[in-house]
Figure 1 (cartoon, chains in turn red, blue):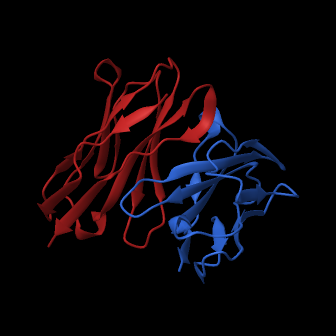
Figure 2 (cartoon, each protein chain N blue to C red; figure 1 turned 30 degrees about the vertical axis):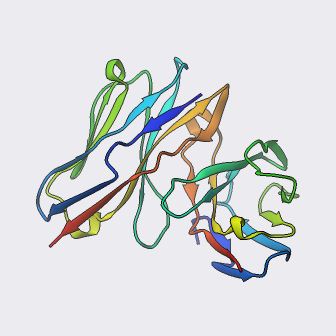
Length: 116
Length: 115
């Protein structure tokens, strides 16, 4: 079964600070996908990134970057120069488990508050 | 609109009543999912459709919950004899496929309140 742990329940930073959100996942599968979603106060989940288990190359998209390390089962997300609009709940979610290649398993998320 | 839409956005009902929640996926997406999100929690999987058929309904809490997708597009989640514990945000998502094509795009949700 898939399990994801986001140990940080809440993080509060001041605008322009860098912030890293941690994600540790557990799976017995050798092939899997990991997702990050953002849920702003409006409530709609916004897809940010998908990585597969074969590709450990880090990825950068604007102010966002992701560090995927299979050896430590971590898929951390960093926001550089945070902005107030980054305030949201962020979810790390592995896909699959038990032969499923469609079911997302969400953790409890990390509430990020960026203060002006 | 290009995104997933859900109606109604809010639904308030009384305990014991029947409710229907509707989801209109992104055009061309064959896979459709329902999730339920309780306050302070991440979404939990309810059911997955591939085309018209429910491929996995293992997340439905009990037999009061049922979902259909008769034409492979719009889906309706039906809850009979609602209970206060059913209060949550019900999220619908769709994707082009599964596996490597499983980038699930979510709708805004329906907030269900059972009094």
